[in-house]
Image 1 (tube, rainbow, N blue to C red):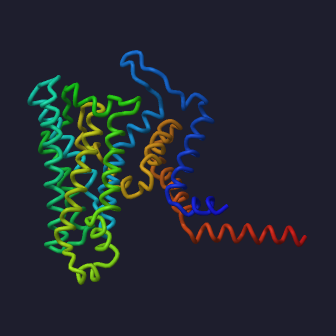
Image 2: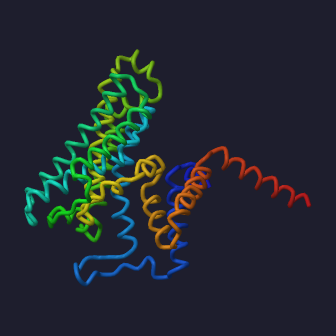
Image 3: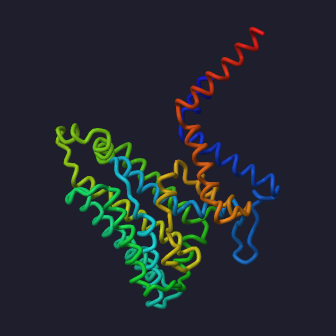
Length: 326
């Protein structure tokens, strides 16, 4: 019983429950929904579960960056647009190099995208820590500016290119799992170690919990805030790489669009990916999709609320007592 109570108080537990319920809903509609087979063309495992893992990779990346930022009581609304910048830079470079099989071109594209993400994150960090703007305002400005930068890079057109090594980032597999998902999980582990086992993680959280006390303890918030936003920019650009490598095309208007909302809501990134896949599978109209996602997220947040759970348990106990008395 004590184990069950501890699980009920754990935020990720309700995320897992949400994933199970969404998958169950899909299975009810199609009993073969969870089936995994082999693609005759690529000779790789294929199925809806693998699609969910692949879709979750970019969400995991931007959610990790948002974790750093939110830990300092900030917010980064520019991650979706930085995804577009990273994807646009990679696609344009690969198109100009015209090297369809070059591993070197792949690494150059990745490096350029991550560099631009770091630069845009640095601007966010300077606006917040040096200029003193509110994170909401500074990253909102960057959200608009970065989307414009993506359009400048591509000339306002959707850009596609061909590079087999780069395409394998999302479409390749390791032990039957998408490479992008495996890479995202590795980064999750690294971030977890940084946040829980290093002085940097402790200082990041201390700034968010009590900035005045952390300052009196000798912690300089300015370089830490800059570092946090740079990391968020790099991870967002990495998410953009995962997104464009799947189809080898960047949509300057659609890539990363509203992904900052998913990053903020991503208690468990797999839940968002499963929810997105469920919306498409059930044929929910585009107009009703935001409302459908909002209902699911609100229910999940309510389940994670200690006050709501306590109230539900108290109601259940009262009913039980009334039944016993009767």
